[in-house]
Image 1 (tube, one colour):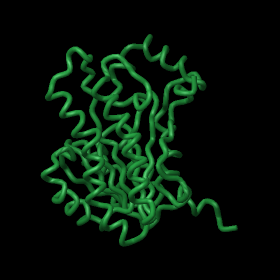
Image 2 (cartoon, rainbow, N blue to C red; image 1 turned 45 degrees about the horizontal axis):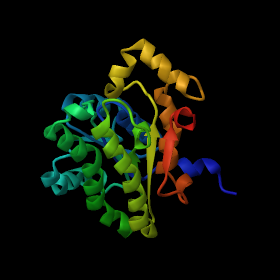
Image 3 (spheres, one colour; image 1 turned 120 degrees about the horizontal axis):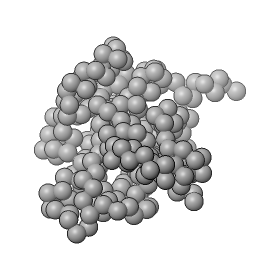
Image 4 (cartoon, rainbow, N blue to C red; image 1 turned 90 degrees about the vertical axis):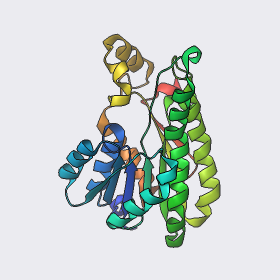
Length: 253
């Protein structure tokens, strides 16, 4: 038997992580770099990306861009690929939750949510997949949510996009896995990120969410490390079209 640790070694791989300026996207970039990958972080905030680049060092480069701008997808892929080469790994962590109730959803809020949470992962993947096909190897990781299958107050637009991510992930697998490209999604529970600050700013609400899990606590940033590394490495070579819930058992109850 080969050394099982080699299954998780990303030396020589190139990863692109959207939403890398903060939260779980930033954590994913750090984990992949620690596993040997060269990482290109993409986000709109250049200062936060610069901090990430300084933290990781020479294994990281950054691109300031709005991944929801569909007219710039081709230019974005060219810029990302100019850093270390075309990505072998693509993680879609960029996202937004406007928290508008069903009665208060605006057309702009709806369109912004769909463009970033659902359209961007597809069109960016579509543009990068041809190079993955040429190599016969690729990893795409989308970000699903508790709201992929659950309805939360003030989450109708966000929940619709995250339900869409579940089906998008399966459809990506059907289309591209015959070429050696796996497509999976991670569904995080409640983690302390910018996107969930409204939850963690309310200690009572945070405690109620923790009580809903089987593990009886909310997520810690390190809880995402293993799932990310698994889905981006050789270890998950026969896993595709799946949504892996990393939620402490929230959706099991």
